[in-house]
Image (tube, rainbow, N blue to C red; front, side, top):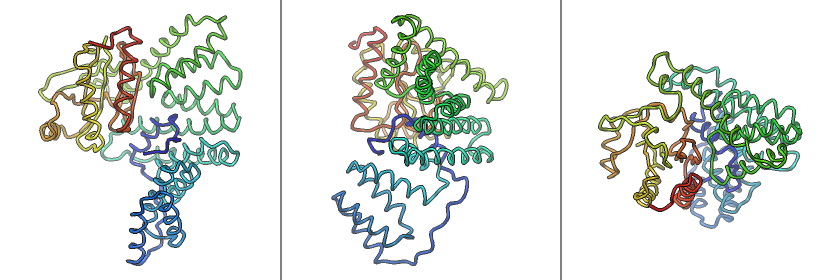
Length: 437
């Protein structure tokens, strides 16, 4: 689990970098060979069995200093990180993420973690380091985009993922420039991020930059764009909406009328852009090309061969979970979703949809039977990539109009059920639908 300080701002975009397999753009330098040392391994084993976080951290730090080239260093640093998180030691969390990055400089996902942490810091040195790291990350992404697609990924999907990764690079660079007060550069880089791939985080950051530049109409438009794009949690969306509404009122003599219409126009723009992007990526005449005009138009099949679309749940609040048979965390999450499904079973304004992401469809039915799961899952046909599902499990909540109002990439077992319940009840309330059957 990430530190509680890990910024939510980049939670979704981190998932993208991890989904790309953290493939290096160059080989990491190998540690010098270390002869087998039973004493060293025994010492490490003793340290890893220490249950007191502070004591374990001190022992592991001493171990790393004593054996600076030990092949076990990644394991040591990860264990220190777990202790640092338990102790809320923010400086150690940053330091040992940086040490892990130094062990494998080509690991994109680790660089994303370090950048996130640096962007949380407030002193000048860390702000400057964030800007430098963001520039390095952008160069790595540019180099990676020149590589041939992996064998298991088609060229069209690879181009889409690279556009998202370039968007992430622009988001990091723009945010780093914003933190240093270089608003002109921040505006340019965040706008470039949105040109590559539109996401709520970049639009929200661009709105803040426009406010700092006193470009208030542009800031309102950026807030409207952010609200039209898929978001993270309802609480975060509420804060974003409040900021945009406050600014809109300041420009319209205290009136809010028209702000909702602006958001809807931006939503239409987003849908049109997504449809055009998908159509350009898919071969002319393909089924997915024809279906890509909106999420509701994707046709998915079930295990019995029946066809389904999200259009069938329009007018309802829909919980959509994306999973796969090879996804270990999905096994842990499933009982939590099943409990909520039972809780809302008599509320016909709430629908639960499960979408499987396995490439080998033959594995799905035996898996469901072996784990005694209901067989009502749908088999994905492009909807996941269209919605930017880059890690599993991912859970979305759709409003009755079909808009994504909640997204959880991964989950925290202790809080997932309560958070999703709150999101469902909030969506019902805003739609004027009853929470009870």
